[in-house]
Length: 79
Image 1: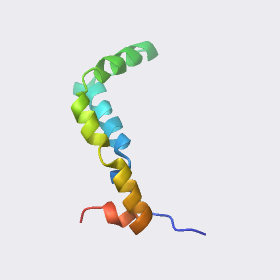
Image 2: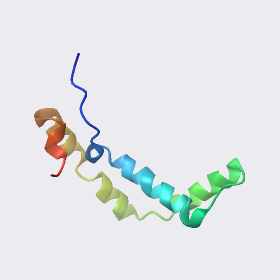
Image 3: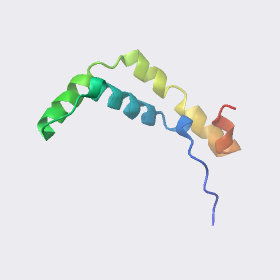
Image 4: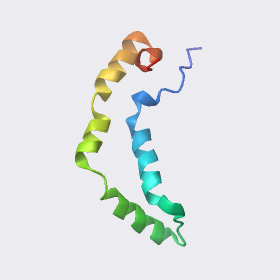
């Protein structure tokens, strides 16, 4: 059996994106009453994201994945 590396969120910036979207959608305790209401809210909040912020979030993913492949998952975890 192979190694089961630890959770390395630094290698998956999409997780940060989902967390940020979640914060925007449910800001101030907002709750959807219907599925369509939730869909509209998500679409509106997606428009609030700054393109530069998203580009920065994804910047360096290839390099991090290469480093993980070469040196292991702990190589990208800041200590």
